[in-house]
Amino acid sequence: MKCTSLLPEGYCYSSVVWRESAIIPNIQFAVRRASLLQRIELTRRLRELTLHNEFLNAGGTPDQLQASLSDLQARKLYLEWGLAEVKGLSIDGVLADADLLIAKGPENLLEEMISAIRSETQLSEDERKNF
Image (cartoon, rainbow, N blue to C red):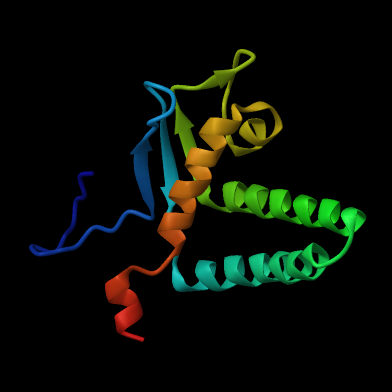
């Protein structure tokens, strides 16, 4: 990425990271980098789903089905929050975005994207040591 800066030693930060799909050739996707505020909001929303999910997993079959639904909703939340852009993919003749991928996209590609989004939202080992 090129960045122009008026400062001679300026730093250019990109709020997204581009990835090449390992699943489907010629597809690139941009994953959002989490700011502190975004990490707080995403964690809050995921926490609600996760706490509900843990409670339901301890129950019978209907509760476990509801827990599966909660897990799917968490995966959807990751995609809605973290997928900034997709290049090289159309679905039924329409250029893909997060909503279209969620509705009609190939599940193996979605799983790859979710994994990339999760890796961007987690603190690195060095970041964890600083806390």
